[in-house]
Image 1 (cartoon, rainbow, N blue to C red):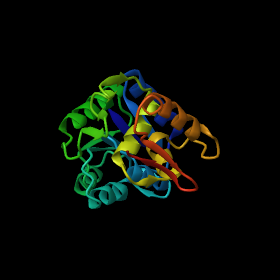
Image 2 (cartoon, rainbow, N blue to C red; image 1 turned 180 degrees about the vertical axis):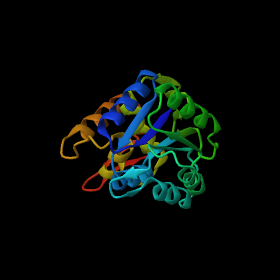
Image 3 (cartoon, rainbow, N blue to C red; image 1 turned 45 degrees about the vertical axis):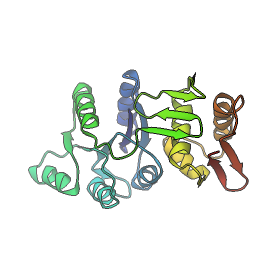
Image 4 (spheres, rainbow, N blue to C red; image 1 turned 60 degrees about the vertical axis):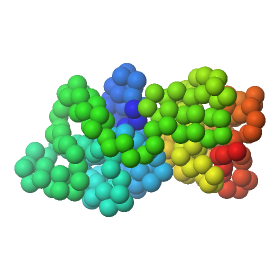
Length: 222
């Protein structure tokens, strides 16, 4: 499972992300509206957790914008407000659930899991490119019927590539999908990650699937 956490309190975001990691749930953190929009545009998530009060805008507005784009990913609104009007506004904006701060992490986890189970199966959950098969639910990856073990970041990168097969994906789009706001775009960590993924899914196979497009990004496909 992959969860987007939009929360401007770094301490709280870290606690939630750490707790989810303990449950083998990957999370991506955005601390403001602009970075949240970028991650929604380029990332794929099973659940989104949105705070209401955010730098640069409102979580209510962000929720409404997500729904206007036709994105059906379950959304949990997370806020310190406890007024009925706020809960109603969140639901009218398109949220699926609402949790008031302070909260017990166990309750947050239970609600995230419940929302993930309700997620509509609109996007394909199994992707095939040439002889590579990627199961987005089990994270099982096979090429030429050989099982390939990937780290969480390697799988996130592969998922980003696979969902944009045949198209050039730039560094910003990849970073938005794989990393959170703490990622430094001026490091070579992306190139290192691409090399690691190439070694696992390309080096011993034909045709090659990961192609560098100089000055633009990467293209994935046979």
